[in-house]
Image (cartoon, rainbow, N blue to C red):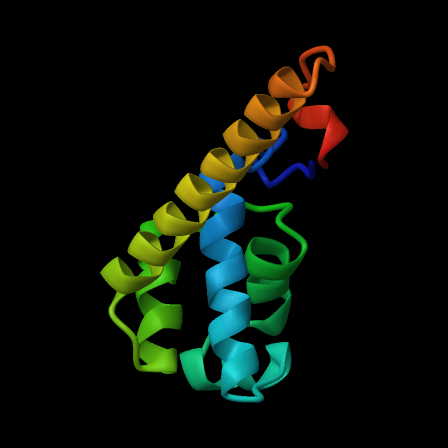
Length: 115
């Protein structure tokens, strides 16, 4: 976490925020755009984009989500929906692992066992 001009630490990103950032990075990667190129296309400082989307030390605001999505030519809702799908798939996979462990006579497992 970092501190901004108001000296309060930025909140750590939750799983959903990390999934949204991952979708944005993947979309840039599909276009073979670097962080620098995306920042140029979005007309925002590369350092700002890097802290929000790549380093995740600064929260991605709705404003910047829209700006970055516009630069990528995608609807912000499609990014949010893809992030939600990813989280649901991860949760389903984790549940499958838990069920498999129970049926094989193994003790319950926790999320830490898979991350």
